[in-house]
Image (tube, rainbow, N blue to C red; front, side):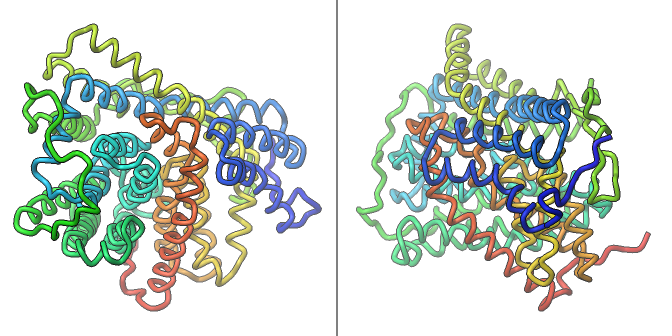
Length: 536
């Protein structure tokens, strides 16, 4: 059994921390500074990780190869299976005229103001897509709609990526919270309640933050009532659902409440007309034979299908746990008292991606799309998806390799050893994990228990910091190569992921720092806000 090394560089944690950071720095520099395509940055990061894992962490080459293969397969199924089918649904909506109809509905029923449309589509509607599907699908669909209305592609992707944060911790029907409870031994309901007392604060400020970026203080003053309704109702819905209802439906319920409340509010309040922020498209331009209300059909069908799929636990039918050959329990995690490191791929033929495929086929039938047109949609989807598939396979392979080699645990131990600074740095552990893997679920599986161990050693509340891992992770979502590559797939920015990364990176850090200050306040100034776990 391979025993992970925590300080392989001269027995020094600081030097080992720097060495373990190298693959991440390679990805960040190539994406952010040199503006290389995401697949090239991910490939370079993987090569660097392989060299360091085998040469410095002394990981056997066979185990390194098995780790890479495990990560690549996980990237294909379930992650990209979800993304590909969501893109297929998008292409069916486009080819059938329902995407144009959705655009026309927005133009007809909403104020002629890009700031309003940006919040409704990217924040309210995007959160609904994140809640039912996750994995960057909301970025691709919301961005396409805004670009069609007349928003510049690069600005659109940046704003949508920033908005795609608050819903992530409860995305894909609460799976990240469920996994966090499993790895920490803390009740998932208590973790959901604590996350629901952190992220609503971020949800409340997010519309103000993005509109401030878009149009400055003048725009905030012009539309602040709508920003307050959108952010406030989402925050309230997120808090109530996660604390008092069912955390698995938190984002679906919160986004529906926010979307409905904002649309209703805009019927009684509208901002003053500002020609500088008027829509580029001000009249319906789609197929006149398709009523505008039918633009909602694909999104209502996918929401209903995925919710029913999850409620009736369809995904568990035919599920198989595949123990990865030559890797499962072949490594011991030194940081966790030499606990054997499992490598089990949970293969679900009826996973969420299959539900989305069913929703896409139902939509095709409802809108009477011909078989030939459907095949055209499949061809379009492949053309859009193959580069993101390669990118995500490479970047998740890096994440798995760093996990199994021990490099990720060296990084975690380094952050956890900072003493009082851990309060501020704790969210950055989740941020790092999600930036690399693109998944809050993976970030919780990696560092969730480490947060609990460190918190107990420092006499902090473990529930607070386990939740901080998930909440911090959502801020890394906007700079994940997986998320960015999925977003650019449906725009004319293919191969320019570095530009998007460079624009979003600073906002990711700023928002994570704000979250760190909030967590510090909850630990030191308002500990009463932390749920009390009843003794078992």
